[in-house]
Image 1 (cartoon, helix red, strand yellow):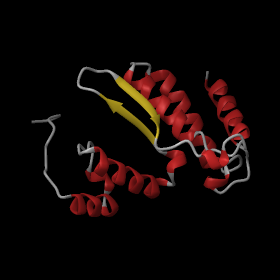
Image 2 (cartoon, rainbow, N blue to C red):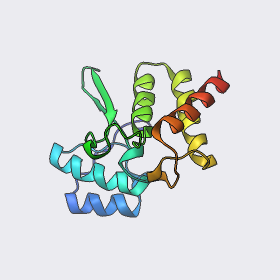
Image 3 (cartoon, rainbow, N blue to C red):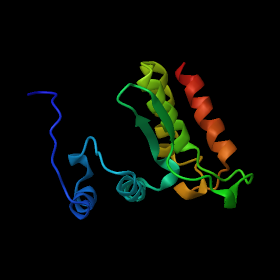
Image 4 (cartoon, helix red, strand yellow):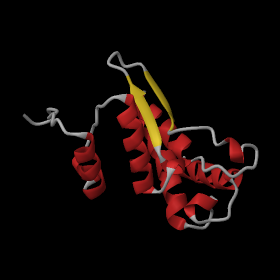
Length: 146
């Protein structure tokens, strides 16, 4: 039926190959944490790195946690170098989960437009801007969308 979830069991190598060949075939992946960690790293590589990869863990009871994927990057802590996109897009996911779609859309549009314009980008995205400069540009765009 329309809107129903379809379950297709797959081996980890098969799922990994499918993710590389055509990630659009997947809407939801359910797997043990270890395999999820491996596939999330693969997916991050497919879309540009950990700095742009949001994450949400949503329980059956609706309780949810949203965060950027993976660690704290202690090697660049305090250097104003981190890409905040993953954290911002995790916030977008949280706002959608809360039903605050108009706010989510503004932040997402501001993030994507900033990246598309290619004028203010962090180093991992091919630019020379600091985290604070990139964030300021996104905030400016959000205000312009208000």
